[in-house]
Figure 1 (cartoon, rainbow, N blue to C red):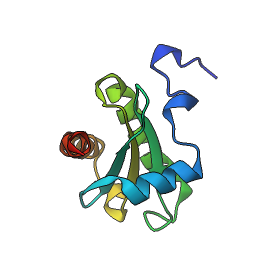
Figure 2: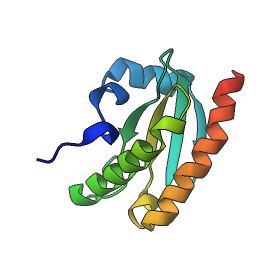
Figure 3: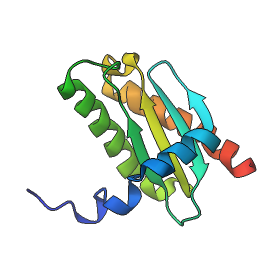
Length: 122
């Protein structure tokens, strides 16, 4: 396995605790598109963290669900330095399975630009 280097996706930038997921779902701000939605809440840290929710309703095929998760992680990995200190949970919807890669990334970027000011104002 190749080393990821400084641009990897280390454990500290991932949401791993189910309690934190629940907190974000309960108190976070939400934005949505047909293929993906984002819920974000302040995390009290100096960096952003990412959680994923890609259910079997999105695609029955694990390969497709894993591809969607990989796309989201790659997008966040590239945006990591520009993101505010929030916990983000990205929820994929069935349209994500058929979205083109570039279109999917553009949608994520638009949603991030919408949700960041919402969280900053609260």
